[in-house]
Image 1: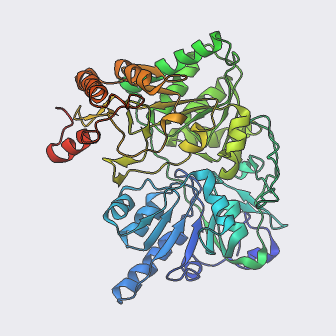
Image 2 (image 1 turned 90 degrees about the vertical axis):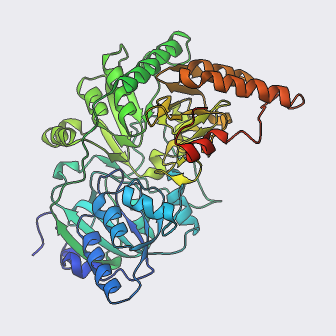
Image 3 (image 1 turned 30 degrees about the vertical axis):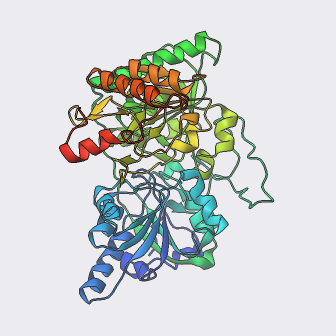
Length: 505
């Protein structure tokens, strides 16, 4: 018997167990699932699928699938499917450590894509057909419309493009989420595309519901299970220092007349520094702020509750357990102040550029000329992925990349002669921040950038060696002064770390 969350007469007849639903997924299938930053991922079907994979593997049968999502999911999805060696390919983002190991060992192919590209590349046919979509929703209405849950991600695309659809209806998701979403239905392929008509972060351009062809729905599964809500780390001294530098620079931009006193719409990546920046803004003088971002962390709820931020547009929640409790207890007070959109809109370059976003994202390392690596350790091992940082950074009015100046107790410098992998070229990077200081790179030549980055962002333990590298590169290449490098040494710091465990000379 279907629950009160499933009131569509047609779809209520398709309620089955997770085990029965999972049988629709076969070896070699391309499977699109809901989920973004640990919110709104399917809770039951992936676990049933993993058990079927275990049985198949024990019988000597190959059972692996390609898994496509909005972004990261949870240990109950990526981690579990990695544990049973059930994945052949993953895209467009992963943060699970067990799956990361399989990607870096070569067992699983990983397509690390800009999040704004993932849906449109599916529509373009770049990834091939989608066999099955597994999407979590909060409710199914009598007319068959779907009330989205705590994330949207690529759900609309998966529902539109999949041959078969499995719906998980999760009673844990607040029923009050109805009305929080804005699902854009204007997707078109070139040459028939039209501008996305959005001029304000909180402007509605779509519908509150997801739609699905009932004929494609092969199973509906009922669940009552929470999202993976990870506690946020306490704000440490380095994060607070970087947040203070960033907030003070925003004051500088307001004084210079380059942005209004209410700032321009804010985007911040997930993590400790991003949350520290939100805490810094809570204590700052700015009022009437808005946010056009990917993920809503606790810091944005704080700003909403304080009235400092009037509205937040995102594609997902990414709250701590305390943040989830606060939201669920006060869900109605946030309606109209929070909009969740598909990631092809939340990360849309056209919209980001039009709105004039201030983008704040983390990095693994930057080099002395401003190239940023946000994805790879020592040039080869993937960490998580580029996510949405490229969508926002390249199109932002103003972008910041932030990182502590060292890692591994000082054995690694985050400022290096040459980035071991480049995700954001020097042409796209405006401001670098470490706990040591801030380097505004706008309007500077490569040589001027090098001087500023070394002086303001590098740790003192590495400044002399970086200065020496630049001086010797200039001396060795008199006819190559624009971006001087010593080609035999450019990645020498990384090589030294791999061989000795430290970048220190």
